[in-house]
View 1: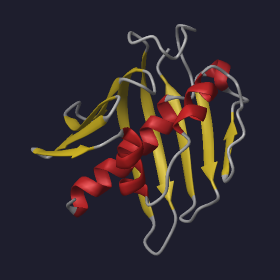
View 2: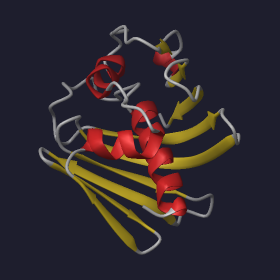
View 3: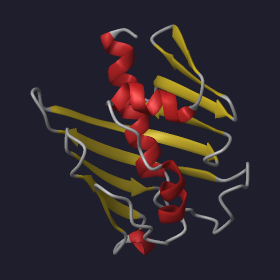
Length: 163
Protein backbone atom coordinates (compact mmCIF):
# COMPACT_ATOMS: atom_id res chain seq x y z
CA UNK A 1 0.00 0.00 0.00
CA UNK A 2 1.43 3.40 -0.92
CA UNK A 3 2.14 5.89 1.85
CA UNK A 4 -0.60 8.19 0.58
CA UNK A 5 -3.16 5.39 0.39
CA UNK A 6 -2.07 4.24 3.87
CA UNK A 7 -2.63 7.76 5.18
CA UNK A 8 -6.11 7.90 3.66
CA UNK A 9 -6.86 4.45 5.03
CA UNK A 10 -5.83 5.63 8.50
CA UNK A 11 -8.15 8.60 8.18
CA UNK A 12 -10.94 6.41 6.87
CA UNK A 13 -10.56 4.08 9.82
CA UNK A 14 -10.58 6.99 12.22
CA UNK A 15 -13.64 8.35 10.55
CA UNK A 16 -15.31 4.99 10.90
CA UNK A 17 -14.62 5.23 14.60
CA UNK A 18 -16.02 8.71 14.71
CA UNK A 19 -19.00 8.17 12.48
CA UNK A 20 -20.09 5.23 14.56
CA UNK A 21 -20.48 7.42 17.60
CA UNK A 22 -23.96 8.73 16.88
CA UNK A 23 -27.01 7.71 14.89
CA UNK A 24 -29.36 10.47 13.83
CA UNK A 25 -32.38 8.24 13.29
CA UNK A 26 -32.11 5.84 16.22
CA UNK A 27 -32.29 2.79 13.92
CA UNK A 28 -30.55 -0.50 14.70
CA UNK A 29 -26.98 -0.85 13.45
CA UNK A 30 -27.93 -3.59 10.96
CA UNK A 31 -30.06 -1.10 9.00
CA UNK A 32 -28.38 -0.69 5.59
CA UNK A 33 -30.07 2.71 5.16
CA UNK A 34 -28.46 4.21 8.31
CA UNK A 35 -26.69 7.47 7.47
CA UNK A 36 -24.39 9.87 9.31
CA UNK A 37 -22.53 12.97 8.15
CA UNK A 38 -20.38 15.64 9.72
CA UNK A 39 -16.80 16.67 10.36
CA UNK A 40 -13.92 15.00 12.13
CA UNK A 41 -10.49 15.83 13.45
CA UNK A 42 -7.92 13.14 14.16
CA UNK A 43 -4.56 13.40 15.87
CA UNK A 44 -2.27 10.36 15.92
CA UNK A 45 0.79 10.61 18.16
CA UNK A 46 3.96 8.69 17.47
CA UNK A 47 7.34 9.15 15.87
CA UNK A 48 5.71 11.62 13.49
CA UNK A 49 2.63 13.50 14.70
CA UNK A 50 -0.22 13.20 12.19
CA UNK A 51 -3.27 15.44 12.12
CA UNK A 52 -6.21 15.34 9.77
CA UNK A 53 -9.60 17.00 9.38
CA UNK A 54 -12.34 16.23 6.84
CA UNK A 55 -16.05 16.10 6.21
CA UNK A 56 -17.63 12.68 5.82
CA UNK A 57 -20.67 10.60 4.95
CA UNK A 58 -21.13 7.15 6.46
CA UNK A 59 -23.82 4.70 5.31
CA UNK A 60 -24.77 1.24 6.53
CA UNK A 61 -23.51 -0.85 9.43
CA UNK A 62 -20.44 -2.68 10.72
CA UNK A 63 -21.35 -5.54 8.38
CA UNK A 64 -22.03 -3.65 5.14
CA UNK A 65 -21.44 -0.01 4.39
CA UNK A 66 -19.73 2.88 2.69
CA UNK A 67 -17.65 5.77 4.00
CA UNK A 68 -16.70 8.85 1.97
CA UNK A 69 -14.23 11.55 3.05
CA UNK A 70 -14.41 15.04 1.54
CA UNK A 71 -11.91 17.88 1.32
CA UNK A 72 -12.91 21.44 2.37
CA UNK A 73 -14.10 22.20 -1.19
CA UNK A 74 -16.35 19.13 -1.27
CA UNK A 75 -14.13 16.93 -3.45
CA UNK A 76 -13.86 13.25 -2.60
CA UNK A 77 -10.62 12.31 -0.84
CA UNK A 78 -11.32 8.62 -0.26
CA UNK A 79 -14.14 6.09 -0.42
CA UNK A 80 -14.31 2.85 1.51
CA UNK A 81 -16.86 0.15 0.73
CA UNK A 82 -17.22 -3.01 2.83
CA UNK A 83 -19.34 -6.13 3.06
CA UNK A 84 -18.85 -9.56 4.61
CA UNK A 85 -15.54 -10.94 3.33
CA UNK A 86 -14.18 -7.82 1.64
CA UNK A 87 -13.36 -4.14 1.92
CA UNK A 88 -12.11 -1.79 -0.77
CA UNK A 89 -10.35 1.55 -0.39
CA UNK A 90 -10.63 3.98 -3.31
CA UNK A 91 -8.20 6.92 -3.04
CA UNK A 92 -6.26 9.03 -5.54
CA UNK A 93 -7.32 6.83 -8.45
CA UNK A 94 -6.03 3.70 -6.70
CA UNK A 95 -8.16 0.79 -5.53
CA UNK A 96 -6.86 -1.29 -2.62
CA UNK A 97 -8.79 -4.52 -1.88
CA UNK A 98 -8.74 -6.22 1.54
CA UNK A 99 -10.24 -9.46 2.83
CA UNK A 100 -12.25 -7.55 5.44
CA UNK A 101 -12.80 -4.16 7.01
CA UNK A 102 -10.83 -5.40 10.02
CA UNK A 103 -7.87 -6.24 7.74
CA UNK A 104 -7.97 -2.77 6.19
CA UNK A 105 -8.12 -1.14 9.63
CA UNK A 106 -5.27 -3.25 11.01
CA UNK A 107 -3.11 -2.49 7.95
CA UNK A 108 -3.84 1.23 8.08
CA UNK A 109 -3.45 1.79 11.80
CA UNK A 110 -1.06 -1.00 12.80
CA UNK A 111 -3.64 -2.27 15.29
CA UNK A 112 -7.20 -3.55 15.15
CA UNK A 113 -10.05 -1.20 16.04
CA UNK A 114 -13.09 -2.35 18.04
CA UNK A 115 -15.59 -2.27 15.18
CA UNK A 116 -18.44 -4.02 17.02
CA UNK A 117 -18.10 -1.58 19.94
CA UNK A 118 -18.21 1.36 17.54
CA UNK A 119 -21.79 0.67 16.62
CA UNK A 120 -22.65 0.17 20.30
CA UNK A 121 -21.21 3.65 20.96
CA UNK A 122 -23.31 4.85 18.06
CA UNK A 123 -26.41 3.76 19.94
CA UNK A 124 -25.24 5.35 23.19
CA UNK A 125 -23.96 2.17 24.83
CA UNK A 126 -20.49 2.85 26.22
CA UNK A 127 -19.13 -0.63 25.57
CA UNK A 128 -15.73 -1.01 27.23
CA UNK A 129 -12.83 -1.95 24.97
CA UNK A 130 -9.28 -2.46 26.29
CA UNK A 131 -7.10 0.49 25.29
CA UNK A 132 -10.03 2.72 24.26
CA UNK A 133 -12.02 5.35 26.11
CA UNK A 134 -15.12 6.77 24.41
CA UNK A 135 -16.65 9.93 25.85
CA UNK A 136 -20.36 9.87 25.01
CA UNK A 137 -21.31 12.76 27.35
CA UNK A 138 -22.16 15.04 24.40
CA UNK A 139 -23.71 12.38 22.20
CA UNK A 140 -27.07 14.16 22.34
CA UNK A 141 -25.35 17.19 20.77
CA UNK A 142 -23.80 15.04 18.03
CA UNK A 143 -20.30 15.24 19.52
CA UNK A 144 -17.96 12.51 20.62
CA UNK A 145 -14.35 12.18 21.62
CA UNK A 146 -12.60 8.83 21.59
CA UNK A 147 -9.05 8.21 22.78
CA UNK A 148 -6.91 5.18 22.05
CA UNK A 149 -4.19 4.84 24.70
CA UNK A 150 -3.07 1.34 23.71
CA UNK A 151 -1.71 -0.11 21.56
CA UNK A 152 0.64 2.64 20.44
CA UNK A 153 0.40 5.03 18.78
CA UNK A 154 -2.12 6.92 20.87
CA UNK A 155 -4.85 8.71 18.96
CA UNK A 156 -7.53 11.31 19.71
CA UNK A 157 -10.60 11.62 17.54
CA UNK A 158 -13.13 14.44 17.73
CA UNK A 159 -16.37 14.39 15.81
CA UNK A 160 -19.16 16.88 15.15
CA UNK A 161 -22.20 15.46 13.36
CA UNK A 162 -24.54 17.41 11.14
CA UNK A 163 -27.99 17.85 12.63
